[in-house]
Amino acid sequence: MGAKSGGEPANRLFALDGIRITAALIVVLYHYIGLNSAWGTNTSELFPVLRPFAVYGWLGVEIFFVVSGFVICMSVWGRTVGDFAVSRVSRLFPAYWAGIVLTTLVLLLLPEVGRLHDAEQWSDILINLTMMQGGLGVEHVDHSYWTLFAELKFYALFALVVLRGVTYRNCVLFCGIWTLAAVTAPTTDLRLLNFLSMPQYAPYFIAGIAFYLMRRFRPTMLLWGIVGVQFLLAQHYVRGRMETNLGLRLADQLPTWPARLVIAFGFLAIAAVALGLLDSVRWGWLKTAGALTYPLYVIHMGIGITVIHALRDRVEPVPLVVSVTAAMLALAWLIHVFVERPLSKRLRSGMRSGVQEIRLHTPAAVPSSPADVAALPAPPVPEPPLPEQLAPEHAVPEHLVPEPPLPEHPVPEHAEPPVREPALPRAVGLSSLSR
Image 1 (tube, rainbow, N blue to C red):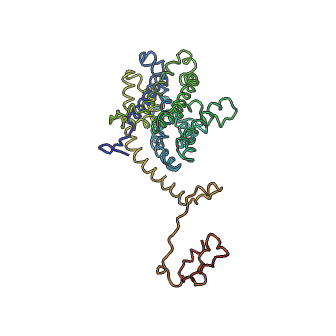
Image 2: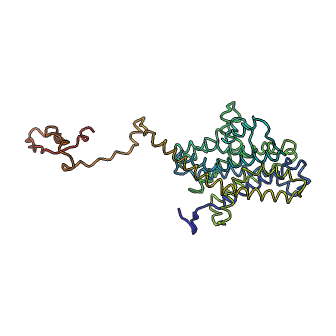
């Protein structure tokens, strides 16, 4: 891997960092301006210019999912399942744990919007530390955490590819099988299939994988076909996503075309990265901005909405939103520097040791079929030991020395039998006879 001066990888995709921070900020805009919960009133009067755009800010999540498909496929190439697990756990959990702790403290100190008042909620907080509360039906400490459980399911599915081997062929097969499962799940009674295939969000993850294959290899009609199919499938769920994020009444009042346009822009932006059109973008600040994206996401909603609600009568709306957003970015930087970096390093080191221990105590796989045996490499043939290298007590008696093999072709009857040279005594290791 090449590097620029200062140790920066030459192939770092700065444009992806820019897309990520942009997606995060439009989600923040949606929560702070598009929703009424922080203000206790309709935000159309407070932000007449920004609100028509902010109500579509939830689409930043869809863009995140496309980026995730791209990045995960890129990062696991040549890695094992253990490496993949170590990478994901050490990447996701440190900032997430910090977000849970800080959000809980804010809700205790400022019970303006959310409250913690009984033992059941405290047990829910403990369950939230696993990031698996979505599967148990437990309430999220911060409502934005639902996307993290969707990410976990994507990782679990893609781990099957890693287990089999991350190749061009396996990635394409995975995209096809997942597409089939996602379009089938809504019309079946198989709840597990619907749960795992995530029909609403699968098109974005799958498109991200296809975009990375374009980047790693080259664009082909097949890959463009995969992306096109996912874009079309995503349109089916736009209306339902609007109802989920805005409520039925507001969703009925708003057109769907802006949402479809945002999705199209998101696909085009990742396509530009895949085709190398944005490789010239190498602004150093984008690396820092990209690093702040995840910490910002895990703290911005619960904490930010609570602070806005507490100060809404004392600070003008626009300065308040700007100030809270800036404060969230500063807090995200502190989490990244003082929590995420050191804790991720320790977590990664500890998990690697655990994975290595598993590998150390896992016996080699036994071939189960002749095809598996044929696929195994031939064992190396050791050089015969020299007589002087063996101790006298390990020398083989002369009568145990094997005779030379007979000729491959039988001797004709009319020919004189060959004169066989007497075998000379030679030392042969006992281990050689046991083979």
